[in-house]
Image 1 (cartoon, one colour):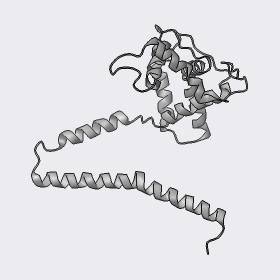
Image 2 (tube, one colour; image 1 turned 120 degrees about the vertical axis):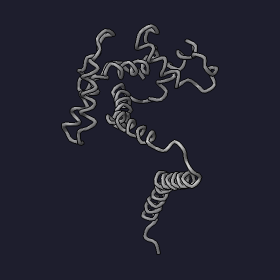
Image 3 (cartoon, one colour; image 1 turned 135 degrees about the vertical axis):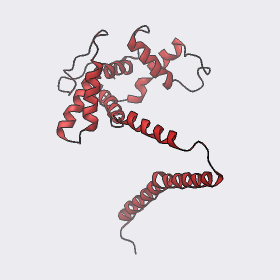
Image 4 (cartoon, one colour; image 1 turned 180 degrees about the vertical axis):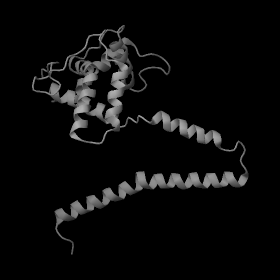
Length: 211
């Protein structure tokens, strides 16, 4: 299946410009745009803001799209090439490189040539949309108040007494264990119970009413 590295003009990113190596977005402006998107409620206006954020990273997305379609890596001495090699390092087969050693050029080239296997039958636009989905999933987890929250946690930890009695240690351990059990129930056991109940309801509906 022959695929072009150009998006169709009717695609939402079809008319976006791929910047040159020297053309970079203003970091402060991109941060401000990301902050505005992260703090605004979901709305059509915020979706338009997300498109602006995506356009700022259009060059990155097209770089990885070209790697998938062509199976080639950008020049190693460029910023794009260094980013690409770092990504391919995480995708290389486990155990192919000794611990602490950098992957060889042959390994990164071979890994890049296998990327297209994850997108069989997909058009160029489909591949781009998949990359956008991954980007949006990461962007939705962005917390602009993370640094502030981390500082507050550190301040609370520093305010704790430097020495603990046996009684306080046992109490803290019990509370931690209780919180851990609650997390296990909410994150693991409860979703499994709901999934089983939903599956049972679906199967029951297919098999007819229970007698």
